[in-house]
Length: 344
Image 1: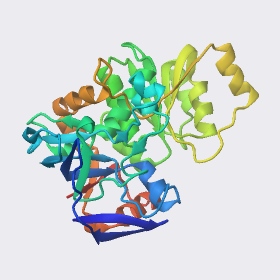
Image 2 (image 1 turned 30 degrees about the horizontal axis):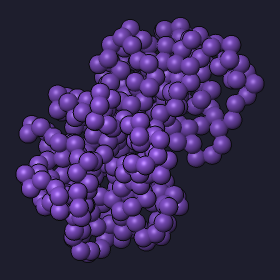
Image 3 (image 1 turned 30 degrees about the vertical axis):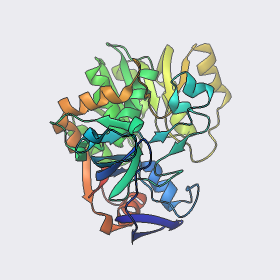
Image 4 (image 1 turned 90 degrees about the vertical axis):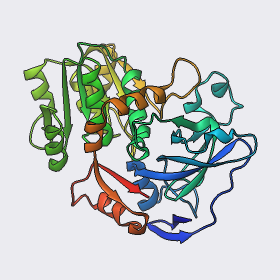
């Protein structure tokens, strides 16, 4: 099979490898598409890999083409998305069904080989089955959608809220859609990339701001006073300060952005949290279990019902043969992009 192998930092090449053989409890998935996450850019281009060599890719969907021992042969031909986290099933978090915060997890595309490839062997447990009306290519959007869905509902989202979102990348755009669908009164989203600001407006976000041109705090104060809920997506000190400055007392802030350096708090910022009795939430990955709390079942339904809008988020469909070039484009930020996806 063809696959992209990260040999060392910023050196990813196309190789031929044997097709994986599914083991007990696994199936072989023929990959239809795999998205390039922002975390992949850091992992591949900025020395963020756990080890080399590595096949990256964790946002993927495809079709079951073979089953291993103990797996149901009737699964062959099923279209699936894949929950990319492989929990240990031994720790206290796994025992309580909180697999996303497993103490000793594995993970497709970061800790083990992922889906920048034509085939991946996947445990049956990780399969999310798709309706016939949803293509596996669009279903590769399920993972970022699940991450956004989890973040929003960690925040205590309620109808009638004013919502703030920092960052107009794929997750920010998805959050804006989810918040509106959940009954948000107003959604304000901001970024420093003018192309992303323009795209956000095209996608229906009236209150989209270029934070280099418009003071976000002043804008929110003029239009809404304060927001009830804000999601911080930059992982930066300045981003956190802005989010806290627009949040009403007793409001909710969810920290979602992965920081590239230390995030520090000034005394005034600390006081905003303390004296405003603010509720600070963390969010990590998405909820995936057999019980009531399963973000993936929800997001597959959302994707299926809102296919036209989510399809517009895919700005680039590229091939494995394009190699590292799409990630170089994303790193340089000279060209507009939203969701970039390897399509097999």
